[in-house]
Image (cartoon, rainbow, N blue to C red; front, top):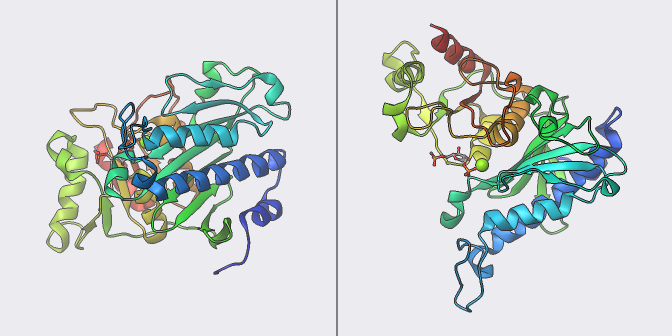
Length: 329
Ligand code: AHM
Ligand code: MG
């Protein structure tokens, strides 16, 4: 074990301020949900978890898709903390209201994508859960309470179901990563104070969309591909996992940039603002990186809908600054 500090001990020692007790409880619940989702993913086809909704397995039982199972697990584990007043999930059209009697201790909002990159499940490649915590001014949160800019988040992070299960989050003073010890069921601090490298030679983008991108993104990628012979005077490597959580985690560990920009097919990009782009942008900025739509800081975008999409470019700060310059010129 790199550091023998459990998640629970870390939270007790490091969290400060008026939200301390609420965050200890809510992050504990998110960790519990992540463990259970990891278990459902691990069992995969053995549990009949791989099918799509309303299909039957060989025993004639109705199968549930893993993203629906993950959504149910996340809600079940987090709704009864006494702190959560409302939730938004990628899997549900409308916000989930929590009755006032169930959040006697606070008015926090939990926004999440229970299983990001879920197209990877059937091919046994990494997926994740993304979450964001906001404060509500209303005891019974209205739509407007959920539509706060990402800069209002008090906590955000992700669980990565990869070669090991990890929980990575920020409460606004840096980023820390915890690895699940499957034997004890405890998360341990393994990646303290994660920082994105200041320099990189790696990018992540779905290259098959090249012809649909706008000029600034084409220019950036062209220059990466020209390598040593081009203006950048260095060779670049490329990765594409098709799981934002896995891409951002790789960037936190070994640097790089991740992009899902606007394109001619999807003019607002593909990723959702309030439960995908915002939490990941908060984490990336807290690790010394940057996150932009190309035209504005993602955390400054004022949301207009629960499932609104946004163009995303995030990671190594100097590369993001370069992309912003290309978009401005
Ligand atoms: P999802 O929330 O439906 O899983 O979609 C989001 C995912 C991201 O994790 C990933 O970056 C992107 O979609 C992959 O898109 P593509 O299929 O174009 O490669
Ligand atoms: Mg998603």
